[in-house]
Image (cartoon, rainbow, N blue to C red; front, side, top):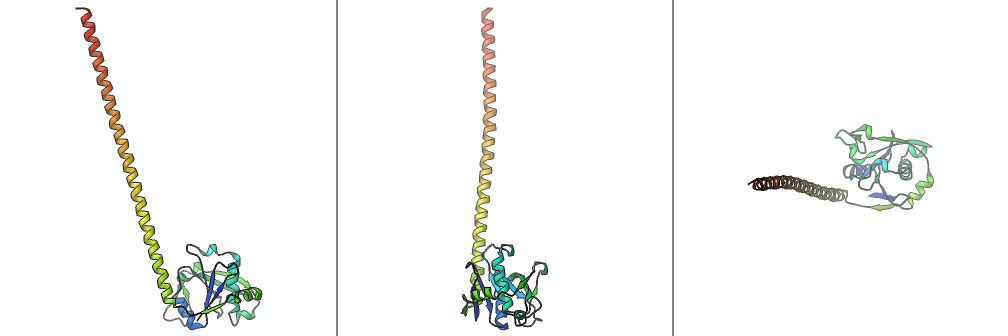
Length: 214
């Protein structure tokens, strides 16, 4: 079972597992848009924020960040008793899981991409989020597979569009080159015609000059 919430702004979905076994499923079957939250140095729920495609952690506004941090703090047995804790968060794809780790334990591929923020207890926000709570039983593996296929289709479409754009640019450059070449040839022909005309005029003038003295 997975718990789903809506952010206070209503634009984003937050979700978390019921226990450590479900946390393992969430770690394994996250999606590229997911951002992971956890209380630093304490046991807590694994909370995920699903961002919009193309968003980065820099795009998470303060209210949305506060929603996630407040929720993960409230779902920490030790953390919920403290007035404040530090929350760490990073992209799901930055999570690293090895065979030597216990259930719920994770590392990071790039520790420098993990952010840390101090969070105060905020029961008002937690109660607001709890009002949107839904308990669902999703097939996380199928959802991940479907999303990854969508991304592949989008990448192929973008690649085809880029290739088409490059072909059009190449055709336009070839056309411009051909026009420049045509203009050069026509210019040379015009110069040649002018030269021949001038030569003809000079020859005619010479003949007329000679006739005047005969």
